Image (tube, rainbow, N blue to C red; front, side):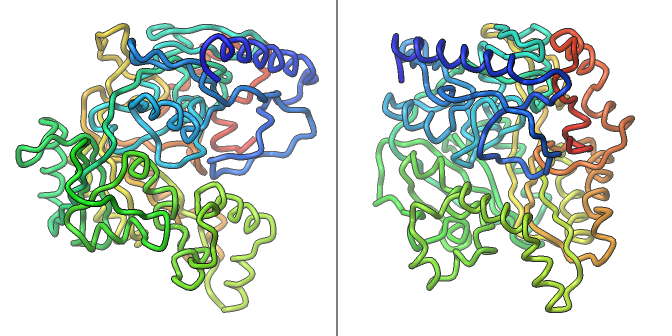
Length: 463
């Protein structure tokens, strides 16, 4: 759906969207009518109709000369990459799960191995059209209050219908080098050095992430774009499992397409919870169904029927607390966080992904200002730590003691956490961390009738 036809279809889809807004009764929550989600927090049920987003899930146009694409807000990165790779290009940051949408990554949070040099997905957006709480579609650009406050607002300011994003050229393959570290200090030093120079041992680094498997066993994976493969590319969509290869080999080669989705096939390592890493089960599990959105549906069934809790009760195991979070801490505080996490939470492996926020940009210059709703220090190296699982804690699990402890420790270390999962902050702390005053002012301007649920109610109260 590109070119003139793409623009025509987009116009028609936006008209359906705005018409559906008018059908939502006053006082009823305004929400998207979508069947899938990558959020890990439940929300209150509603019988009100949702916003009709049909036809808002494609690429409108790719401008190869400018290196940009106009993309609809509900377009998944899987569909987006399918289009842009045909031109030898990809978005600056491609989050690791196929069904994350571009609009979702910008109004929420997305991150990947290019974030150490390209920042976060919203930092390569040049322009957005946003359906606001007033039912109007507003075009906004960097430097304007709606544009600047939109990232990390999770629909509390509206929904992106179109985004113009920057693209970068890529060749057909990615060469990987897995570096093992026994010492957290050296790991941290190496992350800082690669982030500063963009290279390691004289080789350019285009992507950088890592895994902490156990205390004293840490890996950084250095990715370098290449059009000169020196070996046959590996395939981790079949019987082989990507994350295990990190421990098993020092170098590797993937097609660019497979590199982008290397984590999706096994949902990092979480597919093991469903038996998908058992070699006998895996042979019977269709390849097309080994992907993150399928595992997400299985999680939904577990939530609905309490399957894991019933099995634990039958086996006499303590009640589980779900600990599913992504947090960022300054790189120099990574050792302190991981050492604390090992002692207090004890969950492994965990994902490591360095990032440097580029700040609010206009044109080709960076203003050096923080994004107000997720105020990481600009041009400072952070490391995202992702951990997704459960911890047996007993009856107190309902009070989320592990998650609350994580929030407190991250705050102490000068970090932030994403809000795609459960949050437990009180209102005062939440507003201090996510600039609640600015968020409220922008919301009042673009949602004067308060049709959209505010961010605190979404993230903490789960309304």
